[in-house]
Image 1 (cartoon, rainbow, N blue to C red):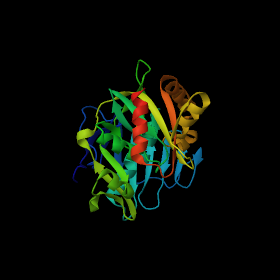
Image 2: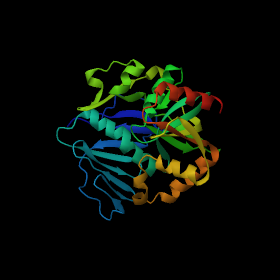
Image 3: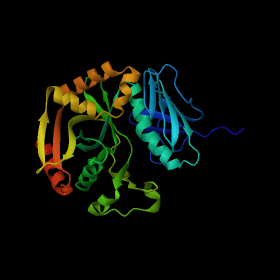
Length: 303
């Protein structure tokens, strides 16, 4: 019987050993893996689940993630991922799931903080843009790349606390995902094989030359809120409003109760909120992305 080929990666501050090849991430790391990714069978249900929905079940040391057409995945103890692909699932879709919701669950299990945010680097510190899917995080980062700012990740900002109690963001990987209607704005020409999923007009682009592959301290977090606003406005947050914003931006926040990590998460965001500034940007639904980025750049350069 042939020995299973393994691939070793470094992503979000973790050494990952995987049976699935992930060309999005460069092969690298020395030492013992923090997380192992395997293909195998997962249970249909978790016994004694503390929290559940149609798409997940959580119980202390385990999360069972479920999809209709990609894979079911068991994440255990912050160090084990078992993936059971669905029949007909595309490998690219499985990798996208692995590097998104699955790795976000691992980060939470390891008592770190995954924010749903894209991040750039300014003078050796991170500026993070958080919000729900579709609010424009990737567009902002893509336009800032054109202005010379390297980036750390497009989707998850994985934050740890160092020995000096400074919040640190660990780099993810060098791909950015953009909706089709943004491509003309940034002069990108999509290829057929860079489409994320059939029937979804979102595409991946690689920016290895502008990827910042070192951990850096967090300087500032912006939360993006599109709505029926007349103008683009910036509102610094404090107190409970800051904590509420950091909670809502936590990737996989709905896992916390089942994992028994609610107190850990509160302590983490309380420390993070005491160390860095958080600002909410309210923008009209149809705001000009370049104008928005002009105002954001002006704001963070003023610190």
